[in-house]
Image (cartoon, rainbow, N blue to C red; front, side):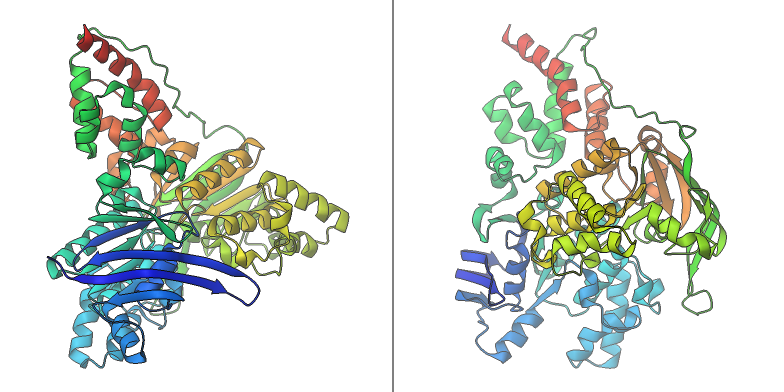
Length: 591
């Protein structure tokens, strides 16, 4: 029987600043076995990150005891050994980048272990190679994208060769294929070396890969069991506003057409596809389902006026340095009034660099950028361009700095010279739009949850009255409920006439929101088109490490298996499409 790697016995932990007290972990008891892969899920603020920090003694419990390979953090010597045993990759990669080049950063940990130069060199090269960054070893981390920084953080932990790897939303900023590849690599590594893996995630497809799942609510144990056991409790999952993987959520929505035995025995996507296909194949060849599909988005690129015009734009970081990096190559595109333009691409494809040109944070080196007809190369136009384009950064929490939420939202209009009466009016407008309570306006922005902080950052940008809103991964790292709230907000802003540009890796968000999609790869535009146009070019998605939305992937697998043609872009469409087939099959079986 596997030995215990980590054991919590009645553990509680409270954050306190002297005035406010927040119980992050509440009387938690749980065991994690040597070599076990544990997924940890729950809302933002449920205690997941605190749980991780307690596992490697970055925090110490107020009550109860934690054992890590039999050691407790009751002495500095034990704390040192525990932290060597448990390597942690934080949610924000900037929190653990310490050096001026990638190879120096990865070497930092092994050097502190007192290893030989040759051993350090070998570990650094191996770790960078495993995350796909070896060819950039001498590059500065400052020039990396958010996703590349996360890969660097993971390399730094791999170089330490810990017995337990803790990932705190480590794949949230990675493109879909990089996320899949990296998780599979870490899982394979852990299996080969009998390492324990703790993965804190909101990605339910990653949860399916785990041996066990720990669900937290307000720091207390909500659920603990295998993925099958957890996801079988669909009602509780829904009540807690967590999310089932697409195929299981669809299966649950269509439960009336399946027997209890069928619902209990089919868990994997391939099993659900085959079960539905078998039922469809029992229908007569001339069966016709009267379904109405309304998933087409046919925004013409010629409609409206272009608010942003980019022609033959290229951009190089550190152009005079040996670490020079070409981030954009001959990019041309337009952004039209009122559209939702989503920009996708692999980690490091140039997405954030591109949108930095939209409000002149980055200035054109080659080519031209015009915003509202104004050239971004002319210094005199910069104030007006920045009034027209509001940019919400990849980590919007970093845009917060004031003592209260109200002061943070008012800062921009105040700098614009807006009157106090107008500022109060704007605060009221964004408060209603973003559903911010009066009580929240008087709180410190640093006391808020991740989802709340994102909304406040957006409120601060909207209060300045931009015509175009540019969002860089606004939903990354949020729990399912907060993510849904964020996407609804984007749709609401669009309905009110805002032009939306959004960077995302999540192809389900793309399918749901996009009028048009820009696909980038290695700084170049691969294709611009509607979701239908892009999703019908698998080679374009593959070149940029993207994948199909889960709904479309399922529908295509079902089409191939059943012999019928399906194409749906969300669960509601899927249910409406499949219900007539399954109802007819059920009726036929009962005759």
